[in-house]
Amino acid sequence: MNKDYKTGINQNAAASHANQTKPGHYGWILFVYCLGLLTGGLYVGMIAPVRTVVQAQFGLDDSTGIWMINIYTLFYAALIPVIGKKADRYGRNFIFSICVMIFMAGAVICALSSYAGGFGLLLTGRVVQAAGAGGMIPVANAEIGTTFPPDKRGFALGIAAGVTGIANVLGAGVGSAVVGFAGQENWAVTFFIAVPVCIAVFAGSRVFLRSSVRSVPAKMDRSGSILLIILILFLLLGLKELDFFRLAGSIAQFKVWGPLAGAIVCAVVFFFAERRAEDPVFNMEFLESRPVIITMILSFLIGCVIVAMMLIPEYAEFIMDAPAGSGGYYMLILGVTSMVGPPLGGKLIDRFGPKKVLLFGLIVMTTGYCYLALFVSAAPSAPALISGLALVGLGMGFAMGAPTNYMILDNVGPEKSTSAIATITLIRQMGTTIAPAVYVGFISAGGGVKGYRQMLLCVAVFSLIAAAFTLFYKSSGNSSPEGHRSP
Image (tube, rainbow, N blue to C red; front, side):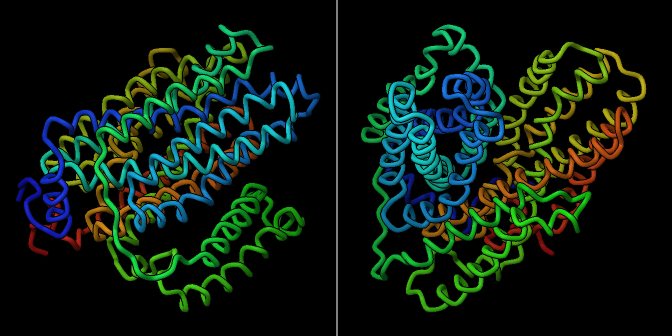
């Protein structure tokens, strides 16, 4: 039965929130959160073109310079669940405002490293920035999902997902433009420009965002928080170095087994620590809910699929025999078409629920990647490549962000919404960490067109598996159109 979302636990929370929010403020609320999402998202890709400039100034090689990117993604992932828990305890908008200022402080530290302090200070600033982004992004999605009324929720989450996607696609281009305008010797401007934007976001948050403090008498699980951060850092460090095509030899290296062993030890200690905690940092109830588990699996697989776009420029240059560096122009096609999906998909979610929208997006993506692998790779041409990338981008727009955020919010109480969003964000980040090693392995093992074809088919398989898991999803909260149907 195709009905708008009308009943359920999350509806009651949303109705309560709506009573505290003036209708005319919804646009401003969405604008403030989306500006925060845009800022946090841009600084993932903006640093890529700055990296070589920084390396030249500080006299670093690639293996050292890459850490200005790696350290951000590692600490961003590690801090997300802890900050999400704090947001559920102390108020999402309060934590959001604090994280905006933390992000700004990190940007200033990064900029000042150009004049004094060197690369070490830059890495410190990137960690501080990661801490700020780790709160801005999941908190914004959770608050949008619980503040907006039922008939506007999917659309608002779609807009938020679209802004995040745009930021990820355009980040590198914006970074290149800033460095080109300011000059390579003034790369610090790349970070300084975050200051006025963050001030604007902070001011907007104080004016338009409502207070949402929850009284929690139990003590914050500090030891569990620290253990979880260390566990995630160890796990991601080990997975980054793992070669799935030479698994035995790869695991034998200390840079792989050392961090993974540390992660296992931390996981055991964390498990027992959480059982004694008054208010655990990780909600074990999540693992008792079938829809939540399916949403976690979907988040991981979607992370595996979406990160493949990093290899699109390289693939385009190879099959089109184009000059190095020109492949980025083809990313614009993927980026433009991916912008269509989130807002339209959000509106469709409000009417049909997230399951059908996500399934449609995954099927379109699977078709697009198969088309690139089997037809475009066999007979390369600009029109064929453009049409294939447009198909992938359209599917990506429908699948990324909004459906899984809606699903997770549909199956947890509002008091756990930020922790839940943070959890699936972390799991998606793990997918984006693991998958590139698999894709590069296929490219290297196959060699030439065969390698790229195998890589693209691998992405299509991940997408198809995600579509299969989507079929098993059924909301437990009865707060989406799926929840109204009889089994």
